[in-house]
Length: 155
Image (cartoon, rainbow, N blue to C red; front, side, top):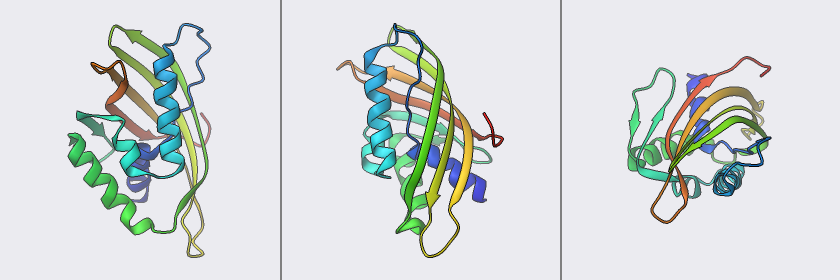
């Protein structure tokens, strides 16, 4: 259950694109920075602003979470017991960013350390994820699909 709970922190996860390609769409870099900033603050509303209304989150041992409203409710439910917790460290390395028209994909390895407060030991976890982004009618990249799974200690 603990792995599942912190797997959902993918929804808080920051993305620092490490693209070697000079050709990566600057809008994806802007999206990744916005997600990084929101995740660092553990700001659910700011993270949700980066999702499309019909987005889908796929987490281990969990039914697909369909729609922005359901994803937001899931995030709020997951973070409610974490009052006082904060992100101590987050590192994400994204690779193989591919853009095709208004669609993009990237896969990432994330490592996070969350101070749970109250004298509890910090959570130290890692995961792999696949993100599917879609460029909206205003030219902004939004999260359309995400999938996360637990990763070994080393990428």
